[in-house]
Length: 179
Picture (tube, rainbow, N blue to C red):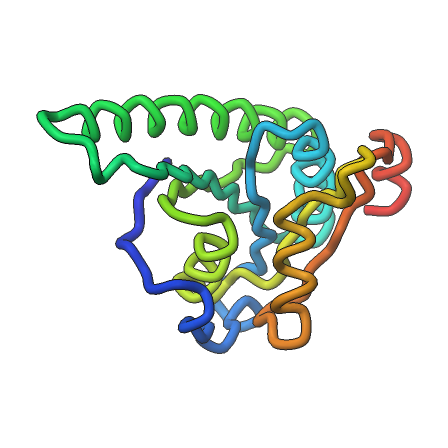
C-alpha cells in the first residue's frame, strides 16, 4: 500500500525518535530509496535478502522532486503532481514485485515529495522501526551517486541509523553470498 505522509521540515531540523525495532510487536525495517538508476536494483535486492534472512521488513521510498510545481496554476500543478505520483507508484510496484521474487518479502511503500535527503530523514523520523538505510553506489565515473554523497558526507556522523552502501557492480550471486 502506498501512502503519502504529511510534509516535514528540512532534514537539518529533524531528529529521529528512538528506534523500536527490537521491541515486542515491532520488526526491523530496511529502508531503500527507489529511483531510476541502474544500481537501485542492487539496493533492493540486498535489502530484500537481508530482510528475509533476519525476519525484518522492507520499506521502499519513492521521492518526487517536483521543482516548480507549486508555481503552476489552473490545475496544471495538480495534474503534474498526479502524473508524477502515478509514475512513482508504478516504479515502486516494480520493485515490490522484485523483492517478492528474490526473497519472498512483501515490501511496504511510501511516496514523499521534496529532496531525497529530506524525504529519507522524514521517513526515519516517522517510522521508529526503520533500523538500516540501504543505498547502492553507482559504478560510473560520476562517483557513488548524489544521495550517497549527500548523506554520507553531510550527515554520516549524526545519522540516526546505520547506512549500508551496496556496490552497484555486485551480481545477484555475490549479494547472495554477502546477505
